[in-house]
Length: 638
Image (cartoon, rainbow, N blue to C red; front, side, top):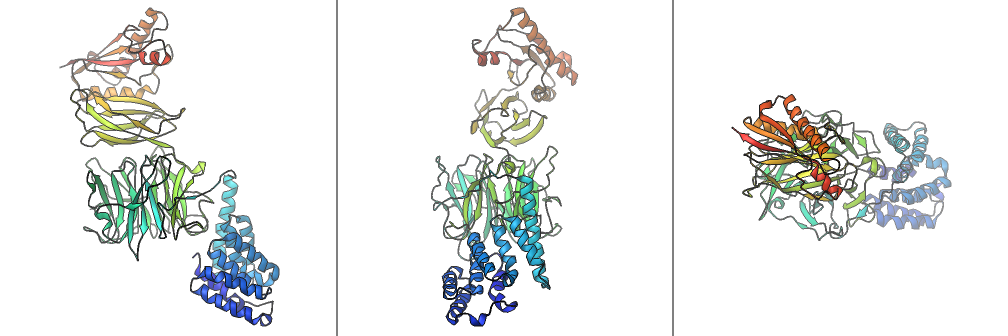
């Protein structure tokens, strides 16, 4: 309930405040019915009390307490419009008596997003002479919330946005509470927490079908569901790890700790405590793993923070161990509670809840965006109607950047909290994110090769994501849409792989499957430099070429005895002599860049071949584009 004191206020209002209407003249039968309804209200049986309050008012249509308590009952059920209607009916009956009800009236107006009217109502309430301290503080708190709502609406002004949460249905939801939704990046597996008997919580999974329906949720198999006291759950984007909060698990360090379970051919492994670098003797929960599995965000109430519960982050080191968890600082954390962090698949947008930042009341959902220098922006409230006067819980946003999931007890709930999906407002969306997965292997033997796979933003040559394949060469990497990227693979002793993903100006497929053969550094091994690009009819290198040129430079530095020839090729458009000259000057440009970075010129040579060695049909533009290429060949290794 939003405020038990408010219910008490409604029930005793007639006896507490000076009355204008004469309660002695109310029909005794109506009073008896009203008092029976009061008992129901005090016992929390609000739905059962409503018809009794209606009956009391039917018995005497001058019974102001009955109609105002009926309004309060509707408010407790979040039927804000019915509450407002009955409050206004009570106000028409007696404006002087109603003035003490401007506080709950304002709350219900705000519940419908009518913050300007709610602000007017609370200002009327605060003008009542000699309000007690509690009422004054409550009124001032609500006034700040309504002012925030009014100002946010003016600033954002998004009247076209339609907030229409859809219940995920009986396959997922039950009469018990469901919360903490989490989904793999390819939308194949959906996991969440369900409340059981008493303090028991269990982890469930459902498969998302191609038609976006959900299979019947079932308990996640394995030992992670054996202990009754658990909480938040998060599945890694590749579906290989489950992270969750658990109490009284083997190896626990104190209060709730964070654990990991790994997917194996025989199911989920036993839970592994994430260790002292992350867990403390205090409450540690709400895990969210970054898409590259390199950062873990969570909430903790350990000493040394800025409030009750703060957000922390830990980074996975090259040796697989986690760094000491660090507080995310006062730009994010407040004297209140920060909970339920969620890092999106774009690895740059963080959502979380807070009751210490300006908002609509209780806890709201906020977002921060990571900048080029890895600093986080000032938290931004997601605004009404995503945030309301109630307490908002955890949010999950799918890889498409617009499909969101959250938990709520809306009117169509199957019971308590249910899981819902809705379309996120455009200005608070992360980048749409796809993924690349595949295997890196030796071209000659076919054996998987452990390698480093990196994604670079071509606009600034900054690394967006860098992941390590597993021991058999398999990898998984997120790919945010809206920019152009260079995708590269490095392994010492092998020629590098590099490929351009131009996603800024075109629609992309939902997934990329890319198996990558690497060639060992040996005589006559060659690689086409797909991302060495030049200005039209010129040997001037485009900036985008720097990403791949630097990979080539790294190869030369790691293999100091290798000698390389750079070959230039063109399509067959134009005169052969011109093409030969252009290809020669372009090959020379690459050599000049390498020598400018310190590579011994004796290790480098270049050759222009014009259009003499096509690898595709010159009759099509696609074929001609493939023929316009630069390649390097190892011509010596001594």
